[in-house]
Length: 96
Image 1 (cartoon, helix red, strand yellow):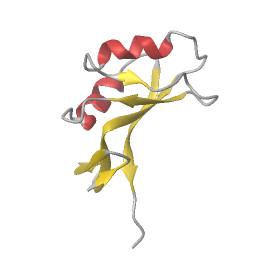
Image 2: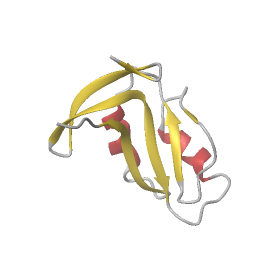
Image 3: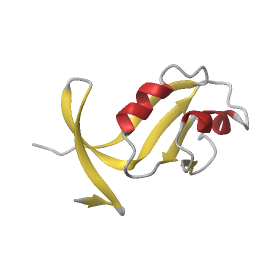
């Protein structure tokens, strides 16, 4: 299965089974948002990771990662970063 050209994977996250978009991640930066906040988090990401656009007014950025990278591992690495408030996979929910 694919979503917007990215494979969809399944994993356990926060105690439940979820489907997520491989190769993408949402990161919320801590305020105040400075121009180079997002570039600072790149040091904690794989070499070929990139940020799609500057933070929105709430501080969220979309990070593109190689599709073979373990998104949950990257989230765990970022949660202790001083400029990151939150990091989440691109979850795909379905109605039951």
